[in-house]
Image 1 (tube, rainbow over the protein chains, first blue to last red):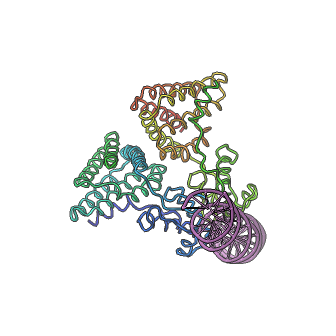
Image 2 (cartoon, protein in one colour):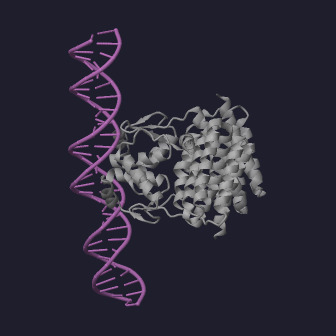
Image 3 (tube, helix red, strand yellow):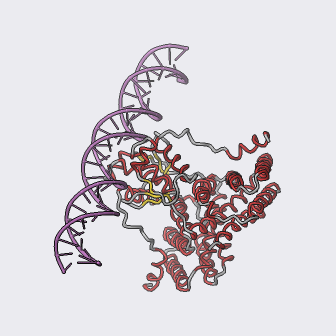
Length: 231
Length: 231
DNA sequence: GACGCGCTGATTGTTGACAATAACCAGAAA
DNA sequence: TTTCTGGTTATTGTCAACAATCAGCGCGTC
């Protein structure tokens, strides 16, 4: 387990640019976390005065943070009426998954072309580790989801395309996490998803770009179809 | 020509949400335009005081606009050192085109599934109109480029996926336009690109989603390969 | 009773002044 | 000459007060 941790760490640690300094940046990250973790539920109105007091800053930097959050699609701002945490409808979620399916397919293709041996074994280790945890607590979807996100994050990074990684991690994954409870979990789904991950990892190990892309696309399209079935 | 204009107008007009009111929004749009049109060249430093005076606002709304521009990738901001117009390296451009190739492929597939008869004829008209202009001024790449962007915008809209359209138009096309001069234009390229567009339009008319996706992806990958050839 | 009107309260948008940080430059020491 | 150091200055980051806008509500009229 320990060597696994050492291996997988490199796949997940993010650069964390230049020790964020300004208040606006810090507040941005705090609100982002609060939204993604569900502390600020969708539709919640975010009053400036309240938030400013809560985070101990003035309204100036706070407004900058809100503008940045709007750019990431986590809040919607209607002029002179304040900002609210975004609320995605059914159609929006499907659109999100369609884009993800394509983009993560691309990430897989690129990753297959560029992955190193050590990275491949690290990814394998990540999956095994994740499988152990899942095995212990079958049923509790939390770790499954958590581990699943780790895997997708790793793929995004392994694509070694900064733009693609940024797009996936910053713009798409936050929203996916926010509305993960809306994607219905049929009984056998976690097991199936884990198997998908295993086969994607195998394809990457064999540097089969075309197969890896196809598997990833289908993996996400499956979740999308499940979504559509819920009407 | 006139009926063509009437037809094509619907493909290109954008909603233009709620008569932008706040100063920050207006300044955002103005700076965006200035950057995309090349008035503010890449690497140019954008001092807050100067810009504020130029656009007749205070530094407050201006900073909000800059944060928004950063979110769209048009400027880079390094804390305590100001913002500069983004400058994409060769590798960055290739990454951009890789993402575009996949995403516009998706847009084409969706468009083929959802396009109406009248929309199909309108797209055809747009291409014909564009072909006429190009025919008149063979060689001047400006109109070619301009028309080309119109076409890609239209496809993005015809995908009828709001998220995809937003992603393409807001985040990707601006950067593509900004660095269009960097993509070398081999002698026969404009003609080839126009033919590509024609064939994509045909595929859409036949509702051949798979073909339309493939053609669009190759169309953009061709530009990407040309880029890679320039080392 | 329903509709329109103006008032009031709260919230957002904006401003100019203040504090803090980092780049710049001059000068001295090695 | 090079390099380190210190102050200087321009620029960014932050704040609190002011102006503008919108939502809700009571009143009067039809």
